[in-house]
Amino acid sequence: MRAVLDTNVVVSALIWGGKPLGLLQAAAEGDLLLYTSQALLEELRDVLTREHLAPRLERRRSSVEQALVFDAGLAVCVTPAAVLRIVPDDPDDDHVIAAAIAARADLIVSGDRHLLSLGGYGGIQIVNPDRAVAIIGGENAR
Figure (spheres, rainbow, N blue to C red):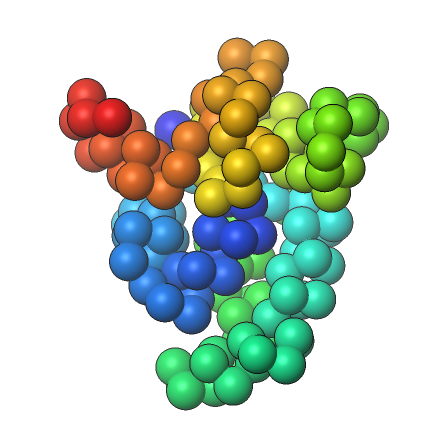
């Protein structure tokens, strides 16, 4: 299964763990193929260097650079042909969809209400981390 993780999911995995971390572990074990783009990696760098998150990352004995290398090492970086205006209230989310299209992803995993409210785009399901874990695990729970 191919997936693009929204930046909020990657940050949650790196800082707090839980189901988002389970998605990274599934990728590390080869049960999930992750994809990203340069725009998403840049957004991740920006978010992780925010004043309130950097210390949390350090408490987990990591740094922004280590987190970026970890994420980039788990995900294949794709280059979208175009970034279309799809998400009406949050143009940054268009980069997530563009990466998923370029990756021919099955899933976009996000905690962002703007993306989740779409439910899907172009045959790509947009789900929260709980639902993604259930799908990857073969469960039918919602």
